[in-house]
Length: 158
Image (cartoon, rainbow, N blue to C red; front, side, top):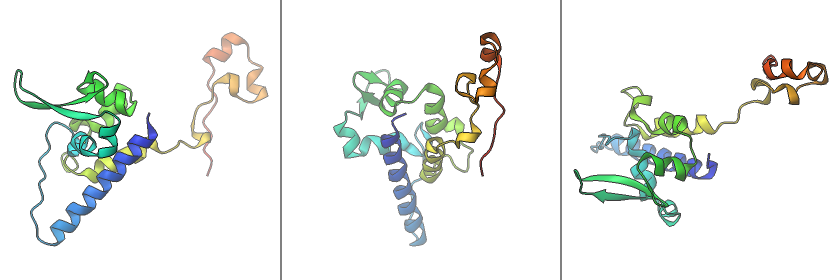
């Protein structure tokens, strides 16, 4: 994962959510339509000058129908998004796919920012299963065959 780019996008989305909230408090109408991606996060990313300078952009296509397609280093569509943010397909879908959000959050940029922050949050060391090769000396005493199949119990650190 490209942590810096994802954190920048999270900050952009938080600012957008704050601007929308303040606009609503002033009685202004706020657009809340989503166009294919949760909270239009890809459009927000493509509008960011720093991301444009790194090669990420949207291009309008005309065939077979007019659409805005993400582009990055010769890649397009979801592949461009995955490559730019250095995400595997699972995390790209988790962060950007509308199906990953419930209806109340779908157009909320704050919801996407919270999801990015959650994905980037470091997992406490004690919450990860350790591979036997990196486990304690007692666990390392297992045979090679057993070590490949043995999981170290999770330990949560408070």
